[in-house]
Structures are given as structure tokens and as C-alpha cells.
Image (tube, rainbow, N blue to C red; front, side, top):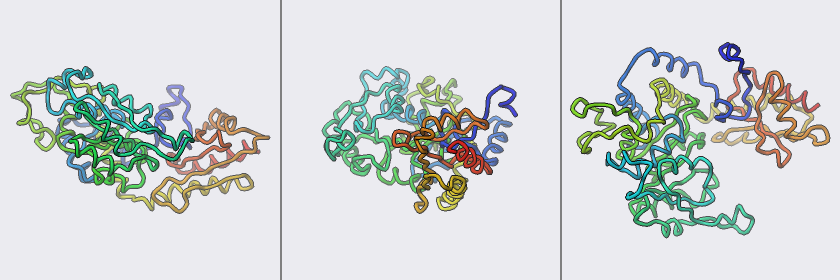
Length: 393
């Protein structure tokens, strides 16, 4: 195996498609499509135009684009909101002085991934006090607070999608659009359910971002940006290789309308977010397979592995979550006897055993470890169950 030749150990990923664990396992069809794509050269703008058409069809957006991950899509999306189609502004980023360069964001939605927004040159303006998280009450930010925070410097509202996010997205887009301000939605990990491919656009998002390497099952270094045609065009102009003579440059009009430009931009701030032809084709293949499989079949496949693991742990305190909700990812929650082994120690035993197994320690403070089936290959659920049962004993 290639990893053995490099002296790198492989592991069974029972945590889910985390980047630090190299993401998930691509299906053979996706890997095959990437290998085939690698054997020909194409005009990347033409390939991105094809991707735009397919992504638009899947999301209901006007246009779509592929970059090197969800974070990359956030960066070029933020850049697009600041520069519009002005190549001079594109050339100045991340120096955003003189532009609309502020982004309004609910304080309880702040996380390390919003670094991508700031890297583009955008300043985040926080609103709201998350009393519901602090234990001081039940309230969080409300739409009127977002409205109050918007000024002539506001380039966008940044919204992190989650089942617990407040205010509701539809309320946020209503107040933002009343001011002529676009809304960027980070929905990187909001698949499944499959309906979320269209949900955020239908609720008014101007740009929405999805990870390509999580539930979609595409290349780990891929992400989807979908939304308004003019914003996707601005993002593309700051991402593509534009070392080209103006009179020889004929980009696909469906992706880039050259007549709207006063000149070709220089290489933009998104050049470091490059997606190769292999990633673009792999992601489009994975998107097609994700939609074709559907939530019910996907849930049944994951649930079957959860049941195998739970059966191997008969006699221990085990709970399979999400059995009924086909729009969610089921999981196995295990509560070890702390007199025998702590959750942290159990995670370490699994991670540094043979074979190495990575589980999710997110519940360790409540005495639980979590097994996520999304990245398990056939036959690995049995190994995971046996190894955990041995460690608990």
C-alpha cells in the first residue's frame, strides 16, 4: 500500500469526516472519475462553467463554483461581496480600505472557521448576547439587532447554519435584503438532509457554502459555493488563473460575462484556493451519487453499521441515536464504566492500538464516546465493535 511505503499508519475512521483524519472514504466511482480527469487537459473556466450549471441545478441557485474546500469558498465569497466586479478592488485585497468591508455576525455563531472571512479583509461586527448558552436566560440575537448593526460599510451578513442557529435564516435575509446587503451562509456540515442543498437558497441566502469532503463523499480538498450569478462571477474572477491577454480571453459567458468588466483582474486573493480538474470532476461525481442515493438509503446504510457495533457491545451501556430520523446521521453512544476505563483513556486505547481506530471524544465530559459510521468501509463495523468490547472488558 502507498501509506505503508511512506511509513504512515492507516486507521479506521469511526469519528466522521474530520480533516485532521484525512476526511472520509471516496467511493470507487468518484476515485475513478478523478483518475480519468487527470489524463486530459481542459480549460478550467469551461470546466467551472459546467460545474456551475450542475451545482445550480442541485441547489436552485443561479450559479455555482468549486474551490479547495468550504473554508476556501467562504474566503472567495467574502471577497466577492467586498469587490463586486471591480478588478481594481480585487487587486487590493486583503487591503479593503475604501470598500464596504464589514460583516455582521451573530456572536453565538462565531467559530474558528470565520478566519476565512477575516483573511479576505473583512471585519466582523458581532451582535447579540447568547444568554441561552451562558445559562443567564433564554435569548440570543434577534433580527432587529442585525438590522441595527448594518451601516454603509456593511458588505455582508455572515450566517452559520445549524439546527440551533438564531435568528431563523429567513428573518436574517429579510432584514439584510431590505438594506441591499447579501447574506453568506456557512452550511459546510449541513448535509444530510439532502433537502438542505436547496433550503438555504430558498430561504434567501445570496451565497451558500458546502463541504465537498463530508457527507457528499467527494474529494477532501473540495467545496461548493452556490448563489447569485454576479457574486459567483466575482468569486471566480478572484480564483481563476488570469495570466491571459485580454484580447485572447473568451471565458464562458454563463460563468463570466466579459462585457461587464473594464479589464481582466490580476491573480486574485483566491488563487491559493485552487481546485484542480480532478477535484472538480470528483466533486461533481460525488454530488450526483449523493442525490441519487437519497436520505433513506444512506441512513439505512449507516444505521446497519451502528446496529452491528451496538450488538457487539451487548451488556455494556450503549445507545444508538437517530434510528428514526432518516434526515440525520445515526451514531452509537457508549458510556464506559469509569471504574474500569475513562472515555479519554478508551479513545487513546483505540487510537493507538492495532488497527488504529479513531472515535469521537466530543462527549467525554458527560462520560460518553461517540461512534460515527459515515467513514466506515464494509467490514469495519465488526472490527470497531470487537475492539471496543475488548477495551471495555
